[in-house]
Image: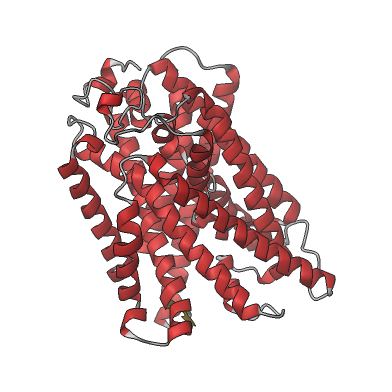
Length: 454
């Protein structure tokens, strides 16, 4: 694969910027690697998509009503497929092999740097939040003055090794550190497959409990349309847009996965298969969670599994759901970390050889990032507030604003009328959802501070 001059000048490697290229065996950092398979790529792509967002979708469907909510989930998948298709077509036209290379081809060095910064902010924020949630699941958390015990504390009592810090340290050293040390994204295919399986386990348990309670008449069929009682309830509908728009963000891992494929022409089918699977999981999760919990569905539906479900073996099922979700996030962590490390390295060392070929730089950047994430999740509680602002904006930029901007710029004259129409729709949704997210976050933080000051 040849690289245009705008991409080449950022990396001394004659092969590819940022990413090791699979077509040159003598350049491979892993001996005997012949390329990634279709199934491995689907697992990695699906794991990139299904992160923590799955737990926020049922509350979004509660706000919108069942029918509009499920329709929006499907439309989100369709819009994401369009944006990824544009990225892949314009990448081929620009003869680049990375997302940053594509944006650099369209907008030069500043555009490339801005994209890399957005990916770093988005992924760093996600990983800090993932670690906070893992800590909540394992060791417990305080919410509105109420103590919610973690599974390890429930099983073994309060000991030094069931504290939040100890459990997160052990998780980091024994689980996360080995997984983030792989130099190829395809090396994560088995853990990604397990992550996908755990998401299916969550759906299966939720569906089973909901159907059981529906049959014994203890739950009613959920609302089909939104509940509008005043102006505030109308405006609250718009706070669901950021959740739905960002539910499928995976654009930062498109090129790392595609560049390792045995047959790169399979990428379009891989994206479609992954989006179909993830939208099915999202629809099933949202439908059965809303059916089970109705208007009591919490913003993070995992919190609903912290109480008696009103069925036999309720406590056992609660534990399975929480543990499987915690492990699921541990396995999502390395796939998101992969593109974080790649883009941070591109920001810090734009003229160096690809990071996979420089062991010292690879492990230094890896250790520095992991240390920052660990310290942020443990010692800076307010870091979540900061990432609420930057995360929503950065994710939406990576998923929709940059692909739309590249298509509208149309440096190589390949954009169709449909591309340009879809691009304007994506920009409109991105700007409106960012505005809604930031406004909602400001309002919630101000309201919380007022309550705290009483």
